[in-house]
Length: 106
Image 1: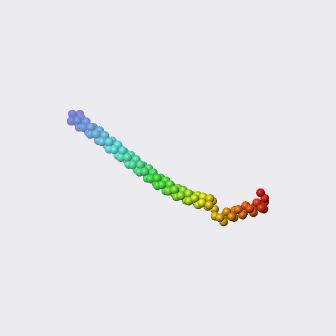
Image 2: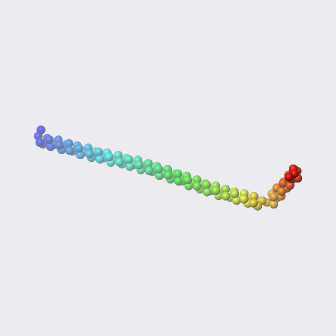
Image 3: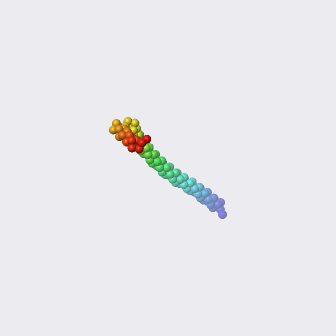
């Protein structure tokens, strides 16, 4: 083989090695890009899920507050009703107790 032939083969080998290295770098870059896109998509889904859960919790908290207010109002009504009974109800209760004592004794 002549020196020119050997030099051409060497140059071709070096060119092929360079092309393979560049192709490997491009493949690595594409793999990294796909991986990054998948991570971003996963993060987006997680963020959306978190936002949805937060909205659900806020709605539940609002419903709980409303229910607490309703219960407080109901309790206040019952408190007023039983601490300050009407005169008519008191008379009915006393008459009932008196009747039972008269009918059954002690």
